Image 1: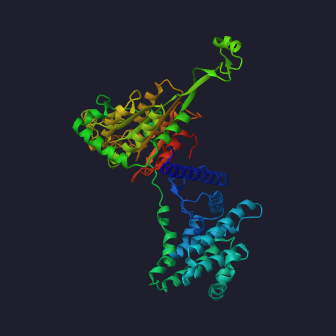
Image 2: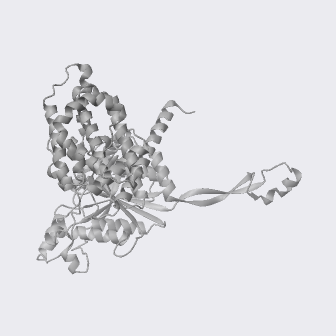
Image 3: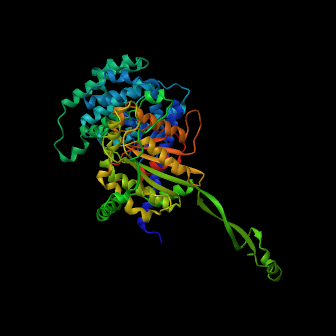
Length: 583
């Protein structure tokens, strides 16, 4: 029997799926409009390459629960026009520093590019007009027009757009705005007239937009806030604060992993070397932690997992659907259609009315893939250890439920600053270009033959702080790929979770600064495709913890694991793992 809680959960799940579907459509439309494949959504945020994209326009901000395809199409159309007609460097030149005039200035620039839309795109024009109309109604119904300054702000927006579009104001607001418009035009007449006249010249248009934005800022400075508590929510300053929420944060660029070419490797035909491998090791992660401490870490991890709001079964269904093949699993007898069962021929004669004399083939999904999760255990990842362990456990559990073979691996070094390998190099007289100078340590946290439940203690080892040292990513990716190549499956997938470039101080000082990251790029290209090949034997995906890993992994995604993991984040990760698209 379905409970009200189940129905509520199903409804929320349906809304989430619909929202993700609409976001995918919006990103696809943007890619089609601009001819640029770098547009994508992640965790409800729009990205262009490594940069989060601010909307910068009041009417483009959709409600969190918006499921209108017209609204999403309007946003993609508007951003495509801004990409085509607006010079961002020029826009930034005169952009006001204060938030309120900056909001108006940005909004006028968006309206300018929308006004440049020609008659050959009636669908785009209709989407944009409907979106602005809906925003206007929402603003009015929120009662922001019931204060003098809220009405003034609304009137300036309506008049400015009307002038730019050479179209009458929305009929629903003409009577309400008549008196306010009569007072505004004398003060802003020249600037308003210039909006339409200079719409094709962004530099000239900016002067008029700046004048209007400055005038609005002056009105806000002279405004006395309402003292009546019933009017607090109608304060236009509060409305602007909501509209400005996180806008500055949206413009912060995601840092990109530093990368470059290694002169040593280029001069030596890309022959990467290690000075010595005598101290390299491959260890079980749980062997590095005392059992009592491992149990304590496991309890901590269980508490964190209990607080997560992730539908693991839904993730398992996605893995099963994309990473399995259908195989024949015998026959079902006693069916009413199919192939006649020879054992029941006599029954056809003795009981002509009996129809259950057929056989039908039985099929079942069987996994034909293996997934490896490779975790960067360098020092900077130490602070993310618990969050990464949680993410990896959720993915491993979902893969296990889907019947997909998976292993969890890690990589670090046995020492800081080179350890015994560097000391051997020093004793040898410091020969030039020695190659990798540290003790590479590869960790097996869960192997492919081990069920998730038996690997739970090993996953808790990721909470041990002193396993995190330095990172030699290229050799680790190569090691993980070689393990995957031994699996008897048709699809192999490697997910690398990292928060930085390869880094080993001893190696960098003795060679050149890009020796390790050059090798990482070469390894990824060898196994996933590159160097003139269209594709490789392994799908390699990079998950950057607050960092854009695009210099190394053509298929990548930036993830934010600073807070509680949710379905949106896990859906993003699974979508990237299963998709062949490149962002």
